[in-house]
Figure 1 (cartoon, rainbow, N blue to C red):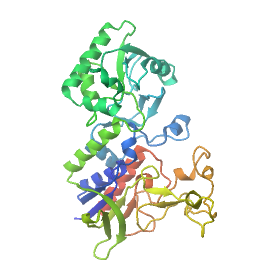
Figure 2: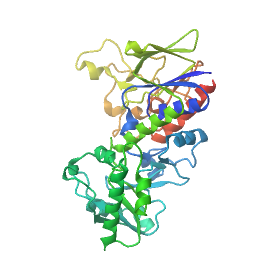
Figure 3: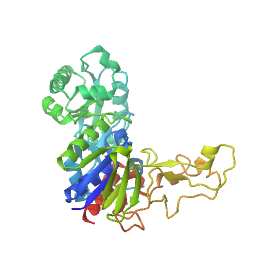
Figure 4: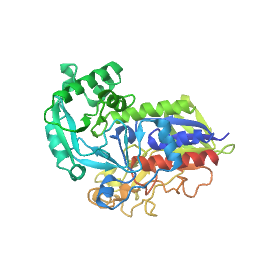
Length: 411
C-alpha cells in the first residue's frame, strides 16, 4: 500500500487526501494553521466570477468524476449542471458554478417575490438589500422581486450584536431551528406586501457544524437560505466540520502540526519533518503540497526593498519564496519568478489592481495537469494556490487536488 502525505488541509489538500484514500492509499494529512478556504463565503467558482460575468472566462460544464466524489464525501455542497444564482450581502446578485447548500440560489425560482428577512441586527439592512437585489439584471430577467418583511427571528436582545458565526452555531440546535421556522412562517402569514413567494433569504446564520437550510426549507415549506456573506463567515466553519467528518470516514490519519521540511529519502521517496520535533518524521511514497498561496502562507512576498528599506542589498533576491523547505521553485508564465532589480521591483508592477493580469495572481510552483511538480519523477505534487498559473478559485483547487491525490495513490 502506498503511503501519501498531504501537507495542508484546505479544499485542495482535503481533496487530495480523500481522493488518495478512496484509491486505496494510506494517507496522512498534516494540519497546520487555518488557510484561505476557512475564509471562503460559500460561492463555488471554477473561474473568477468577474471573468465569467464579463465573458473573459467560461465555467466548465461538468466536474470530473474524482472531484465530484470528493464533494459527495464532504456533503453539503451543490454543483448543478447549470449555475447557481446567489444574492450577496454586498447588494449584488451574482452567478456561481456551485454553492454551499446553506446559501439560497434563485437560479430555478420562477417569477414572484423573495422574502428578505428584516431583522434588527447590526450587520444586516434588509430594506437596502431588497432594493439592490431587485434592481439587478439577474432578478429582472427572472421576474423576481425581493421584499423586506419584518420577522422576530432573534430570541434574545443581545443577539443583535452577535457575529454571524455565533448565530450560525445557535441554529445547529434543532429546537432553535424549529423556532426560527415558526417565526418565518408567522411573518409570511401576515405579510401583505408579498405575493407568490418563491423563497426566503436570511443572513449567514444557518449552521456552523453543518448546513441547516435544507431542514429549514422543509419546515417552512419554501426554499430558505443564506445570503452570500463576506470573508470569515460560517461557511468556512462548515467546511472544517465537513472535512473532519469526511477524513474520519475515509480513515485518513490527521496530524496536528506543521511540516517544516520535505526531503528526498533513500528507502522511500520522501521524508517529511514535522514541527514541533516531538511529532517526528513521516515517510512517504508521495507528498502533496497544499500549503496555499500568499493568503494561506504557502509562499511569501520577499523583495529586498520590503525588508531592507533604504539599505543597498548585497545581491538580487526573488520576488517571493516558498515558506516550506522543499525542493521546489516558484514561477509563472515560464518565468522563474526572479527579478533583475536588487530591490525586486515596485509592487504595482506585479500586483492587482495596477495590472490586468498580475504576476502575483499566477505565481506558484510549476506543475503538470495532475499537479506533479515539473521536473520531479519521485511523486512530489503541488496543488491549490501553491500551483502556478491556475485560477485561484475553490473548484479549481478541488479539481487539481483530487487529480493529484489519485495520481499520488497510484504512482
